[in-house]
Image 1: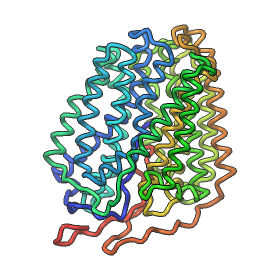
Image 2: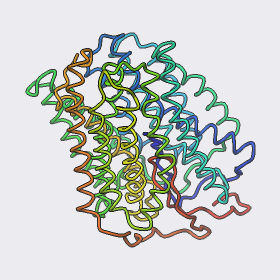
Image 3: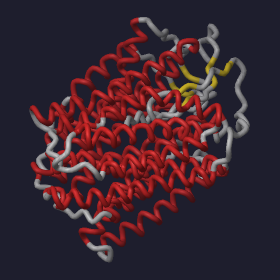
Length: 521
């Protein structure tokens, strides 16, 4: 599924540089193109690499743990540094950070495309994820800060829609490149795109920053949580290969837990935390994010293994494998907004309870995928059920996470929800193959992998259904009272909530009125 990954900028902020870009003008179209391409590169690379894994594994004669690290290396740095990237954009300028992210991402993509070994590719993917952590939050924040208030909803709607189209097209283009040329070109194609993004930004995108941002950015906190995730993922990924009693495995797991505890303690004590722990005093926010972690963990693990099953067992080409999941994106594009509207009327509990169970049913249907069936009889039914479950779940889940915090904390609430979804995928990709008995080279033996893939589907389905049951037990019926808003400065006016992106939350923000002659909002 698409993952816009973009956390809205904190609201009620004083932004240097008046919003002057109008929707429908030439400048507005250029700004939208740059932000869509920038965030699209990061989102597409997170999904297309999964399609390329069998080809990469064959070229490098790599084991499964190396393939896992090619995915988790990117997700680790992106998840760990996402909050830092958003804070840097607010403080030093969204255009500056967005452009820096595009250059960083392009340089890392070049390293990925030229990597001579699996180890160097993994390292380059980690560097690429750090660049994405600069790109992702600055993309939507730049739109919010530069478009005129009356045009902002349409601009973000266009950003969301075209971002969804880009995510749908990405696996098709990536599969074609892998089949026709080489897997290396799924990385090298980012270079001309990044050059275009930089040129457009420097030409058309005005600079904006949050004038009210004070204090220091908690760079140490970002480093600590990233290292904690590295330790946990290393131990969980390498445990089966090196042995759970191995000093390296046991030491990394212990270090990961201790660093995670240190991060929590630090966020409780620093004056300007990356993650305000007070958000979790809301029972609804905590429950919703726990469900997010569980459900997205199951999704991430299955979407890691499914392209391998399709290519190694069912004989699909990378292009066919990329197209196989296209109905999921189509279903979510068509139904997500309607699902969010329904949850707004009746409350999210029903959809957040039933949706994950429907997703689990789709995962169980994936067990029917084998060597002798057809797409229409084996893959399509599973994909449709899977997509319907996601459409029922995603919009209410992210909306509930956001509505459970004061409106002035919508940006950080969104970032937390996005980060936890990635962390769930990180942990699950590390754990599920081992839990299902998938060894280092099992993916090279179709019959053995097919049997273990079925076990993985059953495990993931059980975990996903558990998320639905947890939602049913912890979320009350109906919609909660609106949380107490953060005081709104004079000269602001509310705009309606709307859904932006396939799994980005519906934004709830205060839009500045048209600026006075001073050019300040």
